[in-house]
Image (cartoon, rainbow, N blue to C red; front, side, top):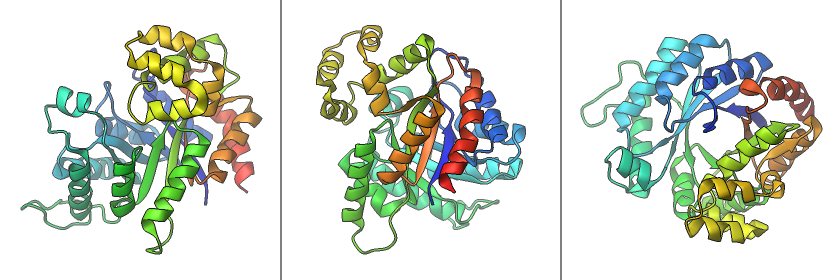
Length: 316
């Protein structure tokens, strides 16, 4: 069954504590799932605990967290702590991240494929209550789903083999369809299709400040491998070339057309956003995580309260 959740964003122009306000807004609006990632603000498990203590029902998906930064023991302890202290349902998501974060920030070895396989295996065993490398979790959380963020073919193959769900970020609906087909080919006749989730930025009737916020975030993704090729296929190869040649990010942001924002997001009226979400579902996404723009809509509250009943009606 298709579903829609909310993602705590990493807007560069907003206070980090807005993440808690977004969580409360999503909970108040009746959304069932909140994704809590990690970048340069809060520790994800600490933030998830704070969210769980300030909300009433919303379930938590923690991550995608950079694989290799935490050991399986640390991941299992973190997830167990959130569940025990909040009484809330929680799941875990892992991703490759980047050499800059894994090696540059944390001083860990960059081996995402091998590390992902081992981390999912050992973390799942620990959460289920098994002993791994001499350690056993005192408060296991058996059956915890583990999602894997997969963009390129190598990580998609790993996700198909070891994950309970595949996660994509900032992609077009057609890209979702391509990944769905790739997963089907990798899985063959081995079982039911893996759930596929996608994160997309969402903005209700955006004004100039919101469009600037969206453009600034998109500019970060123009150059990296995989994203650049996708944007090129969408007709924006000139922007990708400029990003990879070192053009400053503010200048890149100014050059991003509204068309690109609509190709990888959901912006416009409430009806237009709902139709866009439905398109992602039709292309193969089981879950759509909305990343609320907040430049002109603090905590995304207007977006979430307006959209929740409309999305619920669409799914009936």
